[in-house]
Length: 535
Image (cartoon, rainbow, N blue to C red; front, top):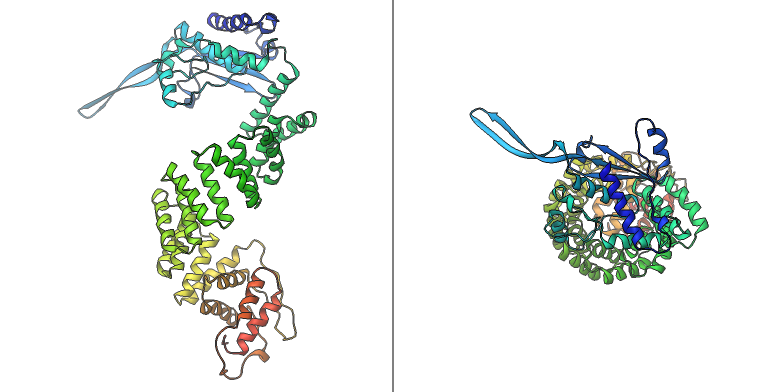
């Protein structure tokens, strides 16, 4: 108790020494809590100290103390652990062998008074608004922690054996004056806003999104141009994946902080997520200029360029990202996707393999590799990788589609049909489109959704004519697609067996929902009538 009061008195004295205006504004009042007044005192205090011998939760072991801020009540509870931290000696016998070792533990004696004083000053700094003091160079932080170099701030993180070196520095006092001004803890309107926003940030950290939104609604109504509030609103929408709503709030923040690469990155991602790729590009390009050493910024740059079809530029962006982290599996996979899109399937495989060396169970990369093997007509190898994915996720839609198409191309139509059936079962809402009678009298039918996917693949060249026709033929034989008797040829026609271009156009338009099922089936009927499909 004595060391705690001395620590708080030191804060008060140093803060009051810097002002001539209102020394009382930096004064602290005390209530000593005991068993008799414990209940009332806790409610009256802005900051409460609690003393415990050691943490009750193992994960917090070997911390010296911590500050818990309650955003709802705007109060802090500081817990100080007072037992010394020591090296405990252990022995254990196994047969004729005796093992012995030391490990960190809590001892039975109290920590020395200087250590308790230093920890109390540090935690009190948190309670009145200061965060940890972090250097740009991590090696400097290690020197501070070890005590081989004096830290410039009481808020630096120090190893427990050196905690008696914690001292309030000029930089700490300057920071508090920048927050509160000369009048101390009598808050001006702007300073009240600062602490109100601190509450909002606390809600965000704890993922209490509903409370955060309610608070922001009130705050922004009164302070619509407050940049920090707009930033928090943008982050909230972003966290909730309301990307369209995040965009105007990010714009407001970027107006005030045009060189903030984090804001530019978030805006680029938000625009990307609503498929406004061209609008996202200048934001991510500006972020690259400001922070050329960021892996995530270069990677997002590549993703946006890929969507815009600027494949060479996308490759350059991924090269920059890989120069920062050559073993980043996501970036390796994305670079492979660019080569795949450019038709360089061999090079795509190289990058997919490199990604799988880092993360051999990534389902997306496994499917991408299988797709590249499919394009190289290495169907058996493609099947092997599709199977690996389906072993991990039996409902993986792209792997099911790849399996079906690969099996068709190996001539195993019966096995392919099983996968097409599994694809059709994946649809949460099975197709209810009915084929009504039309001028050529096609019977009423229900076309499974996977046929639409098949048509899309056929148009794109992912499956050949034989595979597409085989899928239609299977459905006719199974009675899923019903062709009128009048449409069936009585004899094998002598004409060409090539599929006319207009049928492929029809299939393309139908796969995009631009023409009706009946119009699509006109092409099927034509192929039956002309012997391209035999039934």
